Image (tube, rainbow, N blue to C red; front, side, top):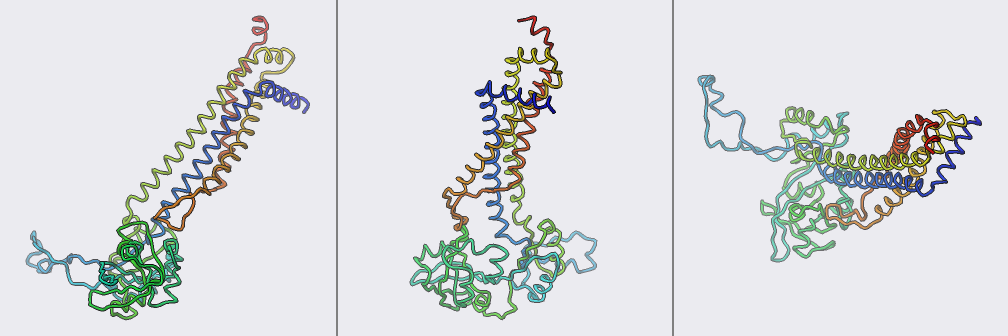
Length: 420
């Protein structure tokens, strides 16, 4: 125990005797760990925001009736041509309804499925927006506001108003920001909506919706599900789209095929609808981790170089220590202890600086049309980044100190003293 205390005293003396070099080594760790924390917190926060733009808007499975040619043509049913090569030209799409057959029983079945987190029905209607002499093409989606908000954070895209305004006012409409701007309309105004069948409905604007995509905001608006059914002149069982959110997104591709066959509808999973999503996320994360790890490795090399030079400057001290009875293991422990002290102090300062800068970034103003409710830069304060940071600081400084310490361990004191 006394020997260990002596070794620690020598370690402290060496560090204080070269306080400038020790400080520079600690700053190398500090800036390396600090940069790692800042990079990981900011980049993963930004990646989470970008991923949320897709995951919040896109259902895991989207079910609807698609207008397409029939897979089986009449000639395929004629037995005489079964073994022949049949070529049919100018195939026309088969006549089909946009509504999903037996939509309400289908929704009831899906809600009871243990793999399903939630189901939201929708009614899509093509309309014209009328305001005075202005007339614009558009589309209105009938939704259940409370479900859309719970499953897809629908309220995050409403500039003025809330999803519940559609519940309180049955004749209300959440107007697209692009339409509102073009027609000089705001909350409280009325807009007339004309359907393809010729019906005209005066609707009160209870909110402004903004997705951040101009092609959507220039045509898309939202009304209560019952209001959309009324626009189409249909009953409560008229549903054109069913959106499904699963408990496990990974089963979406397989489950969409099952639902498509079971309910005889077109079912698109989130991977198919956003093929570039997973690739983009993986690449961004890979770049983030690669840059962060590089910063830590560079800091480790800086510590190694400083400790290596420190050993050359301490040759006389090492020779005296070994000549007075200290073993090579004791000398190695002295220099490893120095490295660990530098790593610990520098690592803690790096965590403090990383956290402080992350807080500043988190409070910096940030405005984006894609998410109108986001006012500051996204930062991910995951405690694991700080744990990894301090562990890497200790491990890297240990390795950076171990190699020079082994060299110091093998120094022959007789040769050093004779050289003097």
